[in-house]
Length: 167
Image 1 (cartoon, rainbow, N blue to C red):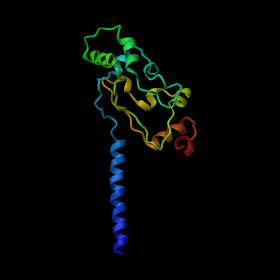
Image 2 (cartoon, rainbow, N blue to C red):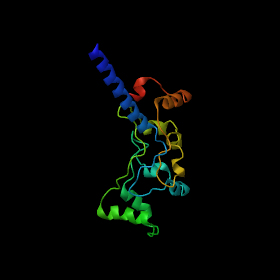
Image 3 (tube, rainbow, N blue to C red):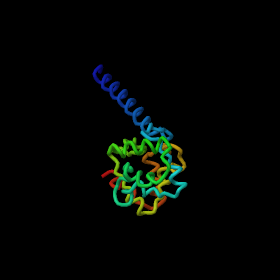
Image 4 (cartoon, one colour):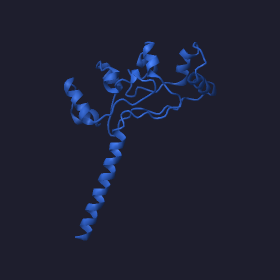
């Protein structure tokens, strides 16, 4: 009897800790992880730079890709260099290093998400990434929960069977 109570107590505590960890990981929609360069999506959208220019894998692969420093330098080398963010960019470029961006969005390992298929289906970036194009600094605008994804799939008449996302 005492052994059974101990197991139940351990299970209850374990589930509570796991639930708190998952909740903390998923509920921080407006979190702004510190980035090596304060990246303004807004300036880029105002200058009509499409998301796919910087996130160049979005149309061909599951991952959208994180921009390489030399890609950023392609445009920024022709611009004034007095902004400290641009100066920091060229420090990375001149050192031959990539900018160690901190990912804003990441689905759990047990979920398969393909940017390629969503782009090919005509899903706009803002559908899943919210108002990120209006951000002065890189900010997480959305949180993802299975119900949200399933609802969207139902509304778009997209597959909702388990293996679509859990391969």
